Image (tube, rainbow, N blue to C red):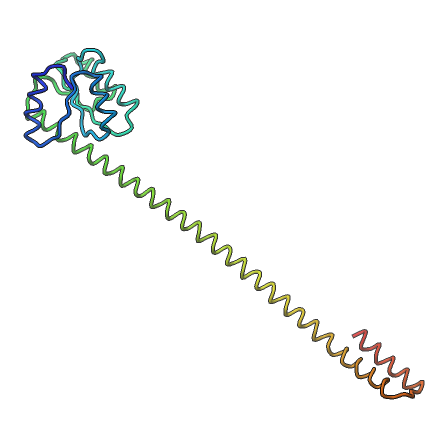
Length: 212
């Protein structure tokens, strides 16, 4: 990003030899338009003294509104230390003076492009890890719910089994006195004439079984 066409041509010539894909803007407005449209820029080389929106304003806008990590290398003929410090504080990653030494310039360009690639790769890995953790948490939660349901089913089965055993015991306890009472009633049925003693004996045995 530079309003000097000569400087832009020189930068293009140097960077194109390293097989970089270069986008050019001659103003701050053009630069921001490209940043918002492309969303995949590895490095911005930015002149600070631009017509219209200044380089400083461009940096502030990027840091406030651009969602992805975009390194900004300020490239300017400004020599004032306080201004350079201010440019760094508002969000520039680095500063190099014009016209500068091309070897130093290329070292910084290579460094910040490599840095940006590593940062993006790290964010992608973090996102993958976060998604993996979310998937594992969901699976664990599902397993916990399934285990809880199985425990409830087993608990219900245990309760049904215990209830069945209790009913079986009750049935067994009732079966014996009912059998005896049935026998006693049969005695009465098949014996038309019963003495008083026999009647009292039958009643007594019947009461014993009923109380049982």
